[in-house]
Image (tube, rainbow, N blue to C red; front, side, top):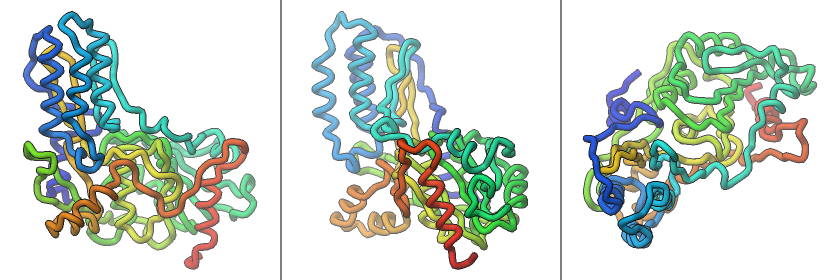
Amino acid sequence: MKKLTLALTILSILCSCEKLFFEENYDSSDPYESFDYLWQQVDERYSFFEVKDINWEEVGERHRAMIYPEIDDDSLFRVMGSMLTELKDDHSNLSSSFNVSFFGLRYQKNDNYESTIVVKNYIGTDFYISGPFRHDFIDHNLVPSVGREQIAYIRFGSFTGTTSDVNMNFILDRYRDTDGLIFDLRENGGGAVSDVFRILSKFIEEETTVYYSRIRNGSDHDDFSELEPAVASPSSFNYVDKPVIFLCDRGTYSAGSFTSLSTKAIDNITLMGDTTGGGLGLPNGGQLPNGWNYRFSVTQALTKEQAEKIKSNDQALIDEVNAENYENGVPPDIYVTLDWTNLNTDEILERAIQEILNDPRN
């Protein structure tokens, strides 16, 4: 698989959605020094000020006014953590030995996945576990409308970095003759972005630019590197002839959102469920003068259409991209949510089943 684009170079530098680079250690008890350092680092490197229309100077002034020379560590942490949460970005965190700040975007809407409903009512308890995947046929005894071994269900709950050709090829070979495949990313909070390309390679027949990437690289909030394509290359062992449906929801974040965004460039994949939680900026960070650690998003990911608007240098089109940027969530192609008053039915999974059964290729 090709990994020669800027986007994948960035991935190799940042490694995953959880890892940070740490700068030189400092030792300072001056609360203003640590606060000002964090504010300036975000001001110079955060990638979504224009997208989210954030007045960072006002945010900084308001929070700095809450600090005083004798402030204790807990109170200082709460002030600085509050400043970061105004980015509304769960890739932007402050961490110490006693607390971690986070925005909690996934808690802004209801969950849309419950494993017990899926197991009891759709696949049964004798499912396979292959690396990070749980999978089986939709059980025709539990879902009478589905014939024996007609539809496959694959649950991928976390981007662990352990996705491989071995487990993926086993899964695809087992479901080679099905009428369709359901790939469940709901409540997947992300992890190793390298898994994204290993998974996508199984659902394409030719090299495909799945999104474009750029990194913040200047003092102005709209200073970025040139846009570069993120390219997925096909595997020799794939599943491309029958419908594939990826399920997502608000808990689908970071690498889950990168995968969801990438499906927009693959005709044979339908994205279904609720809008994802976003997290399309890869995080980087360091250490404050007082020893606390921080991170925040430093890149942007864009669709091909959005990239073309950026390249035009037309300010009106650039404003459109900022307004429609998927950092706040990738919208599904088909919107469906769970009805929590009925704990025997997964409405999103039901809709995916019907889409496959009604597909003209079957």
